Amino acid sequence: MLEIRPLKMTDRTQWQALWQGYLRFYRQSLAPEITDGTFARLVEGARQSHGIVAQRDGRLLGFAHYLFHASSWSAPDICYLEDLFVDPAVRGQGAGRALIHAVYAAADLAQAGSVYWMTQEFNADGRALYDTLARRTSFIRYER
Image (cartoon, rainbow, N blue to C red; front, side, top):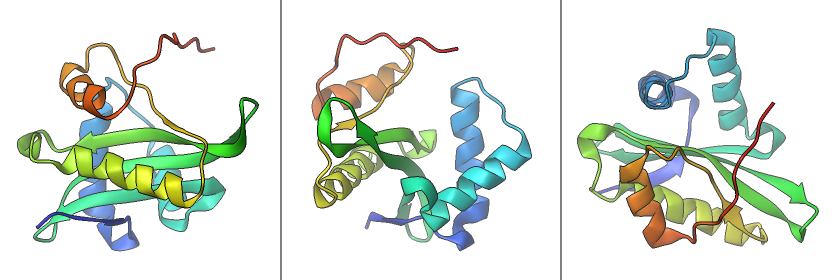
């Protein structure tokens, strides 16, 4: 049975392994203190950041990190699904979909105006799932 629940301090080791897989997938590396701060914020719910995990039989299969923020285009806050990752060994078994639905439920509970996220163009597997759960927009991201 798949369980979606908040991230806990005792999840650190399993979360860290998934986090490293996520960073490898996106061809990124972070200093350990950034990872430490990220995990602490997610567990504490600091700065409106939230972490949830998909778990089966005591094993973490994936995570979602999301936050709420104000928007000049919406009266209520909006929800940004910042990170989503499922262990490649268990993809296609519903964990990613369940995590996104849990973020949707949290956004509905918070009366958020919308939920949005971004991904890389090369993330074909993820995009195939996302296309069934949300509308793709035409926005292009610029960054400094």
